[in-house]
Image (cartoon, rainbow, N blue to C red; front, side, top):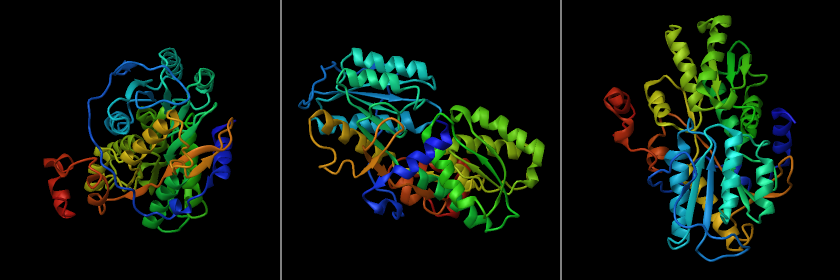
Length: 385
C-alpha cells in the first residue's frame, strides 16, 4: 500500500468522538520541563520489571524515537514522557530510551532488546510504520502492549497518541491561501515529508484540500526520511527548472525542510523570501518567522502529547481502561488493526503574532532564547520582551 492509499484509509476511518478537535483554535497549555537526555542507544534508567497484565507503580516503560534531526523528540517529548511517568508512579516508574537515528532495522532491534529486557509497555514513534510491524508483533506475543506515538505504526497497536495530522496540513495550506489569495496565477512548490511516515501523507492530503483549485502547484516532492539535505537537493532542482523568482510560495512539511528551502532561495538571490510553511516550532524556525524569512509553522503542544502518552501507558499497564478514563477520546484504524484507542491533540498555526501565547506560554522557549542579539529588533517590533 502506497503512502497516498494509506493516507486515504486513515483519513476516512478516523472516528472522532470529540469534534471539538476540528474547531479548537488554541493549543492546550501544559508545562514542559527539561531533564537530562539519554544516549542514542538503549539506556537503562532503573531496574527492569517483568511484564504482567496489571501492576502497581513499579513499572518500566520503553520509549523509542525515530531520529535526531527532528529536534523536539529529545528536547521535549522524551523528557516530558519521563517526567510524567515518574509523577504518575510516585517516582517508582522508570524508562528505557532508544533513538534509531532513521534506521528501521536498528529500531526493530531496539524493540527486540526491550522485549528481552521485559519492559511493561513500549511507547513507539516508528521510523517506518510498515517495517516495524514484525517487531511490534514480537512485543505483543510477549504480552507487552505498544502505544504508537506521533506516527501510527502497523501491527497489533494498543493505543495511539498524536495530533490531528490532516488538520496540520489544512492549517499549513490555508495559511498560504490566506496570504497569497485564491488565484491560479500563484505558483506553489510542495516539499512534502517522508513517504515512509503515514503522517506525511495526511499532512499532504490536508494541504491539498486547501490548495487544490485555488493555486497552481508547479512542483511536488516527497522528502526521504524527512532529511533536510534531501529537501535542499530537491529545491535546487526546482530553482534551476523554474527560476527562484517564479515561485510564489513553498509548502514545506516541517521546519527542517523549511530551513533547507529558505537557504536555497536566499542563495539563489531572491529579493524577498516568498511565504514558506513549516511544522514543529523549532527554535530557529521561530526566529526565522520573527525575521520574516519563514511565514509560519505549526505548533503542536509537545507537553500535552507527551503527558497523554505517559498517562495512557501507565493506565494500560495498571489494567485501567484508557477509553473509560477519557485518555482515548477517539479511535483510528491502521492498515493492520481496527479501532485503535486514540488521543488526537489539536495543532495551532504559529506566526510572529502569537509566539507569546504558544511556545512561551507553554515554556518551550524563553524570550531570552528566542530574542538573541541577532533578533532583538525583530522581537521589539512585536513587543516580545
